Image (cartoon, rainbow, N blue to C red; front, side, top):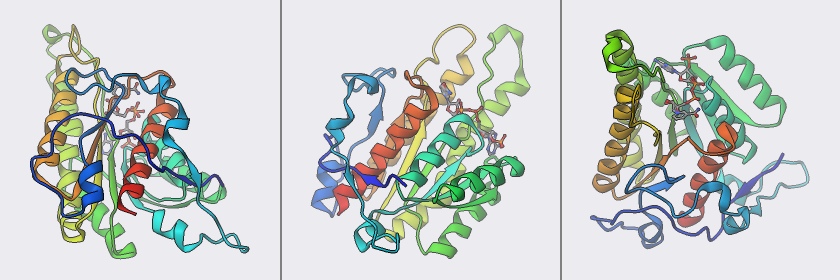
Length: 277
Ligand SMILES: NC(=O)c1ccc[n+]([C@@H]2O[C@H](COP(=O)([O-])OP(=O)(O)OC[C@H]3O[C@@H](n4cnc5c(N)ncnc54)[C@H](OP(=O)(O)O)[C@@H]3O)[C@@H](O)[C@H]2O)c1
């Protein structure tokens, strides 16, 4: 099983820290990480494809003779909640993070897909559990996060990969689709953040990853674009409010599709683990 974590990854993203972190290593690393520069003001200079993996300096996390992770590997292992785990990006992210040695907690509405994905990850040697989750239900989101917290004693990261994309012109007046997009993409992400925030605040550590599209401005993309920018605003506010919680935004419109997005998410979580080590 390929287990890896990032070492000395270059700091990226944009934005200034308004509140200093108590942890100097975290303070240096802490900023709103954004990957794939399609959102004005949040660009990395080069798209992910052009950044060589050598820049991340991956080092192996070792196992002992029985194949069990060593204390080093245990320390790098995070409990990561992934919403929208049955989707293209969510499933790829779950596989990627499990392959890196993290424990992944999968959430989505389609239980049969969740179970199949969990079985696949387990068969590959990964550590996984799954829960039925409707992110538009605040109680559901709470239960999702608390179940993981009670089982593991912590929630290290949340990946908000649940989303709906239903492009249409405004004059098509698809009000129900507008509601669905805003409900899942914006309200759902907020509910998931609300569920993990007190846990992360109490732990003094955590990482929230939002997915936001940079292709949202233009005909047929009014509501999708609005929700993507809402996710950016939420991420930026969270970053400024919470000095101990890392916030990343990934723009998924990158060459390489869902797998590239999953690898980018794996890289930002690994970078954070290294910064805190
Ligand atoms: N793929 C791209 O190129 C791209 C580009 C730009 C932006 N994005 C954004 O990235 C996110 C993920 O994209 P994707 O391609 O992986 O989408 P996808 O394949 O359509 O998957 C969507 C995921 O969202 C989940 N979901 C929908 N409503 C939900 C709800 N009420 N509660 C919980 N989960 C819900 C679905 O699970 P269930 O149906 O099982 O609940 C599914 O797992 C979306 O926000 C999308 O808008 C993607």
